[in-house]
Length: 148
Image (cartoon, rainbow, N blue to C red):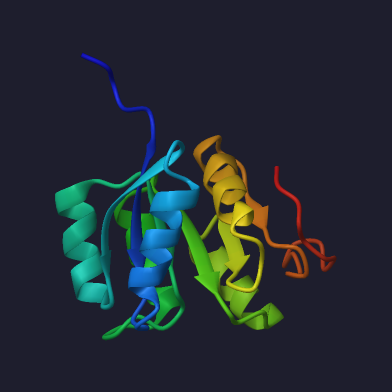
C-alpha cells in the first residue's frame, strides 16, 4: 500500500468560479496536491478544516459570514501548522499586510500563472512564504515573486 504524499488542500471562496478553481488545481497540480474540499463561507471552512484536516487552505478575502482576515487569524490560532495562502484578485498593500499579519504565509493573485499556486503550496509546506510577482511584501515594501 502506497502513502499519498500529495498536499491536502481546501479551497475557500464565495465566488462561482470556485468549481473551476478546484478543477484547475486537480488537473494542473494533480501530482502535487489533492483538493479535499471547497466551500464559500467561513463557517463551512472552519468545519471542513476540522473534518478534512487539510495541510493548506487557499482562501479568498471575502468568504461569506466573516472577513477573510478574521478567518485567517482564527485558523492560524487554532491550527498553527496549517499553511494559509490567500488566493485573490486584490493586490492592495493593505490587504497583503493585514492577511500576512493575521497568519497567511502566502499571497497569490488570481491573475498570476497557475504555477504560482504550486510554488506557494511547496514554499508554505516547507515552512517558508510566497508572494506572487507584483505583490508588495509588507515586510520589505518591495515587489514579490519570491519565497523563503
